[in-house]
Length: 187
Image 1: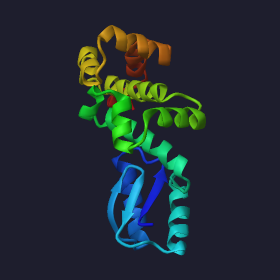
Image 2: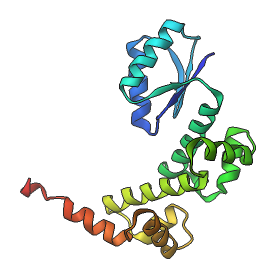
Image 3: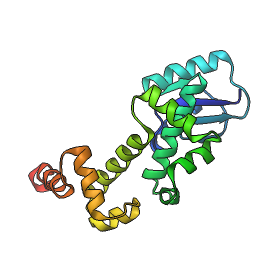
């Protein structure tokens, strides 16, 4: 198989780390995306074993079974949509997942819930709230701008969801983060 699926790849830094490991092992690749490496030629069993060992030390893992690959693809798709501020955030999540993964959404939803113990929707909400937290910490956008970018229907809805997930209002979260941050002069 020319493709290898890797668990826990969530950002461009992860892609860079996996790419570095592939270079160390002198494995030639066509492409690396979140959760997937496509090789120019099929790697040997020994190369796969070495790669697997080096990836584990970095917090990644080669995925062997089909269901785990589907779950990882669901997660990576959601992460891409939310954290890359992908235009697909404005589309229906079930349509996007079905389209990208070429599988029925009911199957994806049931599989995800069975294996992960939460719904796809809750995972999606958790990722959106993590992105909201990140944006609040950077303090470059207003809450209404964040709500717009992440396709919340209103600031009130974003605030309610944020409080439900974190136990804090966005403004309280922001104040707490500002208190924890010390100016450079105080370091």
